Image (cartoon, rainbow, N blue to C red):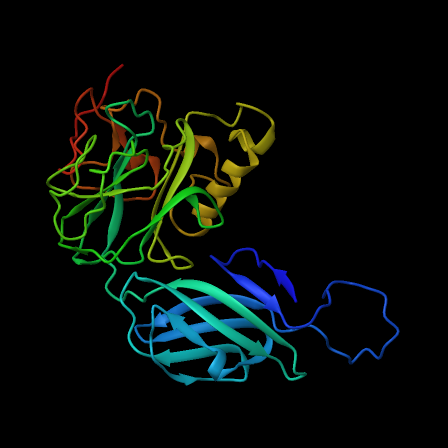
Length: 341
C-alpha cells in the first residue's frame, strides 16, 4: 500500500488501494485500463450540517468506511460525482473535525483518506484588522488587534501571517461569541508563560505581556512574531473561505532592487498579489507595488500601526498611521494622534 500526501489540504493523508504510481510511464496495455484511484481535491463545509468533498473524477464514498471525528452522525451521502455531499448532525462552529473515508471510482479503484475541516459558522461577524505592531520588544511583543463591527461567532475564522497559500503562522479561532465593538487581540510571540491562555468565556482570564482585560486575548502557539518591515496580514472567514480584510506593509520601494518588483522576495510579492486578488487590498495602479503598502518605519512596540478611531476602511495605506510613543491602544478605541519623527 502506497502513502501519498496531497499538497494544499490540511492534515490530509491518502492511502492508495493500488500499488502503482499514477504519473507518466511506458505501458503497452490498452489505453482504457484505469489503475488510478480518485484523487481528493477539497473538503469544506457548506452548511451547519453539510460537508462537501471534491475529487478529480466521478467517485462514490463507501458508507461503512466514512466517519467523522469527533463523532457526527451521518444521514446521507450523495453520489456518484466529482462533488459529493455528506449530510448529518449539526457541527459546532469552528470546532476541528476529521473526516475519514474511502472513495471508489467506476473502475473499482479505491483510495482511503483523512482530511481536517472546521465546523460551519454562519454567524461570522464583520471584522477588521484594526491595529498591529511589527517591531515588538521584550515587554511588548508583536500583537494584532481585530475589531468586531457586528456581533457574531469567531469560530473557524482564521488570521494568516501571510496568505492562505503562503504563510508563516496562522490562528484558527475557537468558538467565541463577540459583541458589536469587541476587540480581539492575537499575540504573535508568546513567552510560554502558562498564564498566556486563549480566552473564550472570560476576557480577564489571560495574563502576560499586553494582555487586556477589555479584549479577548488569544496566542499563536509557537509564534515567532511578525516580519518587521515587509509583510502581509490577511483575515478569512474560514480556511478555504473568503477574505474579510488584509494589510500590506513594507518599507521598500519599487527601486529597492530589480527583482520581485522591489518587494525583496518572490514570497512577499506573491503574498501581496494574492491579497489584492482576494479583495483585501487596493493598489493605486494595475500592479501592486511597495509604494501601495503601509510603511512601518518609525513604529515600535508602543508606537503601533493603527486605523483611525472610526476604523475607516478603504483597503489602502490611507487608512493607517503610526501613533506616538506609548499611544498604542490594544483593547480600546484607536488614537488619532500621529507620530512625528
